[in-house]
Length: 241
Ligand SMILES: [Zn+2]
Image: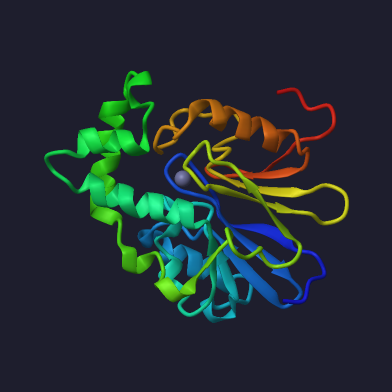
């Protein structure tokens, strides 16, 4: 893929209930980072249309991780590479499959969220997200196996860097777009929102201490930050945080 630098723009704005979807463009080359949930498919297509693009014009997808709010429109883009971490993929597939175990899910979930009991409301939240997960998780919408390009073996397209942020889930990717002076960081759920909003409907971190370090490491890059569930913002030299 020829590269004259990537430009990142928001396709679907992130909010407490839906994930940020991002278009990366370099000349006539286009990639999408995280495509949202199935019910957002018409919005995603419309957002592409507004930029003169059709799903067929997209050459690759990047999935920051495989929670349901980020990957269920991958199937709108068949046959193109989906760049992701195999660790994040396998972890999520296994999680959603274990959540379907009616009798044992509360015990099984500790494999994925070992810090569950550190949170007052975690069991309640987990029950709620489990119901959503069981209703919405659909491996067919996540992409077909031959599409996956694992970043464990292959780099992202030229000009894009991986910043591994495993506090949210193991293998979570934040994407660093270096383009001259200030980088753009597509944080995914490593940085949910500018103000650390705890109303955001997502799972607890896999590892809370690492999650805090991930957030700090992204803010320390001082650039334009695209959070997983909030509007983009700039961190400049003297930013208070
Ligand atoms: Zn999310």
